[in-house]
Length: 188
Image 1 (cartoon, rainbow, N blue to C red):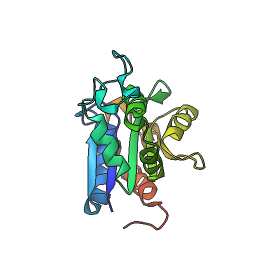
Image 2: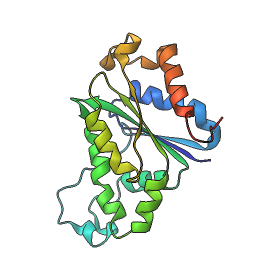
Image 3: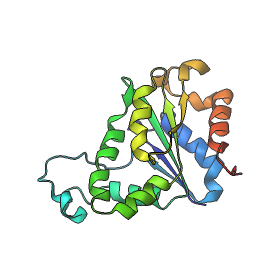
Image 4: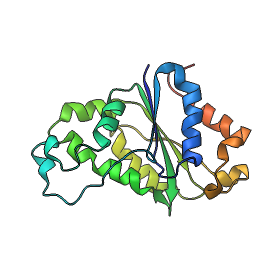
Protein backbone atom coordinates (compact mmCIF):
# COMPACT_ATOMS: atom_id res chain seq x y z
CA UNK A 1 0.00 0.00 0.00
CA UNK A 2 1.23 3.47 -0.90
CA UNK A 3 0.19 6.41 1.32
CA UNK A 4 0.70 10.07 0.39
CA UNK A 5 0.67 12.65 3.21
CA UNK A 6 0.58 16.35 2.28
CA UNK A 7 0.98 19.28 4.69
CA UNK A 8 -0.51 22.39 3.08
CA UNK A 9 1.19 24.82 5.44
CA UNK A 10 4.11 27.05 4.52
CA UNK A 11 5.06 27.11 8.21
CA UNK A 12 7.89 24.69 8.80
CA UNK A 13 7.51 22.71 12.02
CA UNK A 14 3.97 23.86 12.82
CA UNK A 15 0.88 21.83 13.69
CA UNK A 16 0.35 20.58 10.12
CA UNK A 17 3.94 19.34 9.87
CA UNK A 18 3.60 17.63 13.26
CA UNK A 19 0.37 15.91 12.19
CA UNK A 20 2.13 14.74 9.01
CA UNK A 21 4.89 13.23 11.16
CA UNK A 22 2.29 11.48 13.31
CA UNK A 23 0.62 10.02 10.21
CA UNK A 24 4.01 8.93 8.90
CA UNK A 25 4.62 7.07 12.17
CA UNK A 26 1.29 5.29 11.63
CA UNK A 27 1.77 4.50 7.95
CA UNK A 28 5.54 4.49 7.40
CA UNK A 29 5.57 0.75 6.85
CA UNK A 30 3.08 1.21 3.97
CA UNK A 31 5.49 3.15 1.74
CA UNK A 32 4.25 6.46 3.12
CA UNK A 33 5.70 9.68 1.75
CA UNK A 34 5.32 13.11 3.30
CA UNK A 35 5.15 16.26 1.15
CA UNK A 36 5.50 19.51 3.06
CA UNK A 37 4.57 22.73 1.26
CA UNK A 38 7.12 24.59 3.37
CA UNK A 39 9.73 22.69 1.34
CA UNK A 40 8.02 22.60 -2.07
CA UNK A 41 8.15 25.12 -4.86
CA UNK A 42 4.65 25.50 -6.28
CA UNK A 43 3.95 28.55 -8.39
CA UNK A 44 0.31 29.69 -8.57
CA UNK A 45 -1.33 30.00 -11.97
CA UNK A 46 -0.76 33.27 -13.74
CA UNK A 47 1.82 35.21 -15.69
CA UNK A 48 1.13 33.12 -18.77
CA UNK A 49 -0.90 32.90 -21.97
CA UNK A 50 -2.82 29.72 -21.01
CA UNK A 51 -0.26 27.50 -22.70
CA UNK A 52 -1.43 24.57 -20.56
CA UNK A 53 -4.76 24.53 -22.40
CA UNK A 54 -2.85 23.10 -25.37
CA UNK A 55 -0.14 21.08 -23.66
CA UNK A 56 0.78 20.61 -19.99
CA UNK A 57 4.46 20.61 -20.89
CA UNK A 58 4.14 24.15 -22.24
CA UNK A 59 3.07 25.54 -18.87
CA UNK A 60 5.71 28.12 -17.88
CA UNK A 61 5.69 26.57 -14.38
CA UNK A 62 5.96 22.96 -15.56
CA UNK A 63 9.22 22.35 -13.71
CA UNK A 64 7.98 23.21 -10.21
CA UNK A 65 6.85 20.54 -7.69
CA UNK A 66 3.16 20.30 -8.61
CA UNK A 67 3.33 17.61 -11.30
CA UNK A 68 5.33 15.26 -9.09
CA UNK A 69 2.89 15.84 -6.24
CA UNK A 70 -0.15 15.11 -8.42
CA UNK A 71 1.63 12.00 -9.76
CA UNK A 72 2.28 10.80 -6.22
CA UNK A 73 -1.33 11.29 -5.13
CA UNK A 74 -2.72 9.71 -8.32
CA UNK A 75 -0.54 6.64 -7.83
CA UNK A 76 -1.31 6.27 -4.12
CA UNK A 77 -3.76 3.98 -2.40
CA UNK A 78 -4.61 6.62 0.20
CA UNK A 79 -3.89 10.34 0.58
CA UNK A 80 -4.06 12.62 3.61
CA UNK A 81 -4.44 16.38 3.11
CA UNK A 82 -3.51 18.40 6.22
CA UNK A 83 -4.74 21.95 5.78
CA UNK A 84 -4.55 24.94 8.13
CA UNK A 85 -7.42 27.39 8.47
CA UNK A 86 -6.55 30.94 7.48
CA UNK A 87 -9.48 33.36 7.94
CA UNK A 88 -12.06 30.55 7.59
CA UNK A 89 -10.57 29.21 4.33
CA UNK A 90 -7.87 26.72 3.38
CA UNK A 91 -4.38 28.17 3.06
CA UNK A 92 -3.37 29.90 -0.17
CA UNK A 93 -1.04 27.02 -1.11
CA UNK A 94 -4.04 24.67 -1.09
CA UNK A 95 -5.73 26.96 -3.61
CA UNK A 96 -2.54 27.12 -5.71
CA UNK A 97 -2.44 23.31 -5.64
CA UNK A 98 -6.10 23.15 -6.67
CA UNK A 99 -5.80 25.67 -9.50
CA UNK A 100 -2.73 23.97 -10.95
CA UNK A 101 -4.82 20.83 -11.45
CA UNK A 102 -6.17 22.55 -14.56
CA UNK A 103 -2.82 22.08 -16.25
CA UNK A 104 -2.14 18.60 -14.88
CA UNK A 105 -5.48 17.10 -15.91
CA UNK A 106 -6.04 19.12 -19.12
CA UNK A 107 -7.16 16.68 -21.86
CA UNK A 108 -6.41 13.71 -19.57
CA UNK A 109 -9.86 12.58 -18.32
CA UNK A 110 -8.60 9.08 -17.50
CA UNK A 111 -5.92 10.54 -15.22
CA UNK A 112 -8.48 12.78 -13.51
CA UNK A 113 -10.76 9.80 -12.86
CA UNK A 114 -7.83 7.85 -11.40
CA UNK A 115 -6.89 10.80 -9.17
CA UNK A 116 -10.46 11.33 -7.94
CA UNK A 117 -10.82 7.63 -7.11
CA UNK A 118 -7.88 7.68 -4.66
CA UNK A 119 -9.38 7.68 -1.13
CA UNK A 120 -8.59 10.96 0.58
CA UNK A 121 -8.86 12.02 4.21
CA UNK A 122 -8.68 15.67 5.18
CA UNK A 123 -7.43 17.05 8.49
CA UNK A 124 -8.13 20.72 9.10
CA UNK A 125 -6.37 22.55 11.90
CA UNK A 126 -9.11 25.00 12.78
CA UNK A 127 -10.91 26.64 15.66
CA UNK A 128 -13.70 27.95 13.41
CA UNK A 129 -15.98 27.25 10.40
CA UNK A 130 -16.35 24.14 8.30
CA UNK A 131 -18.45 25.04 5.27
CA UNK A 132 -15.69 26.63 3.19
CA UNK A 133 -13.42 23.61 3.68
CA UNK A 134 -16.10 21.10 2.79
CA UNK A 135 -16.80 22.99 -0.45
CA UNK A 136 -13.10 23.28 -1.33
CA UNK A 137 -12.40 19.59 -0.69
CA UNK A 138 -15.21 18.42 -2.96
CA UNK A 139 -12.95 19.16 -5.95
CA UNK A 140 -10.58 16.44 -4.76
CA UNK A 141 -13.06 13.52 -4.74
CA UNK A 142 -15.77 12.02 -6.92
CA UNK A 143 -19.19 13.70 -7.06
CA UNK A 144 -20.86 10.80 -5.24
CA UNK A 145 -18.67 11.24 -2.16
CA UNK A 146 -18.65 13.57 0.79
CA UNK A 147 -15.22 14.68 2.02
CA UNK A 148 -13.95 12.67 5.02
CA UNK A 149 -12.81 15.53 7.27
CA UNK A 150 -11.43 15.79 10.78
CA UNK A 151 -11.66 19.33 12.12
CA UNK A 152 -8.95 19.42 14.75
CA UNK A 153 -9.36 22.43 17.03
CA UNK A 154 -6.21 23.33 18.96
CA UNK A 155 -8.44 25.18 21.44
CA UNK A 156 -10.21 21.91 22.30
CA UNK A 157 -6.84 20.53 23.45
CA UNK A 158 -5.73 23.62 25.38
CA UNK A 159 -3.43 24.85 22.60
CA UNK A 160 -3.05 28.05 20.59
CA UNK A 161 -2.87 27.39 16.83
CA UNK A 162 0.00 29.74 16.03
CA UNK A 163 2.11 28.40 18.90
CA UNK A 164 2.14 24.84 17.55
CA UNK A 165 2.50 21.91 19.92
CA UNK A 166 -0.84 20.32 19.11
CA UNK A 167 0.68 16.84 18.72
CA UNK A 168 2.22 17.10 22.19
CA UNK A 169 -1.32 16.53 23.45
CA UNK A 170 -1.96 12.79 23.86
CA UNK A 171 -5.74 13.24 23.30
CA UNK A 172 -5.03 15.17 20.06
CA UNK A 173 -2.66 12.41 18.86
CA UNK A 174 -5.27 9.76 19.69
CA UNK A 175 -7.92 11.74 17.78
CA UNK A 176 -5.67 11.84 14.71
CA UNK A 177 -4.86 8.12 15.03
CA UNK A 178 -8.54 7.14 15.29
CA UNK A 179 -9.42 9.26 12.28
CA UNK A 180 -6.47 7.95 10.27
CA UNK A 181 -7.41 4.35 10.99
CA UNK A 182 -11.14 4.83 10.30
CA UNK A 183 -10.85 3.53 6.76
CA UNK A 184 -12.95 0.86 5.12
CA UNK A 185 -11.03 -2.38 5.49
CA UNK A 186 -9.05 -0.93 8.40
CA UNK A 187 -5.30 -0.65 7.92
CA UNK A 188 -2.88 -1.63 10.66
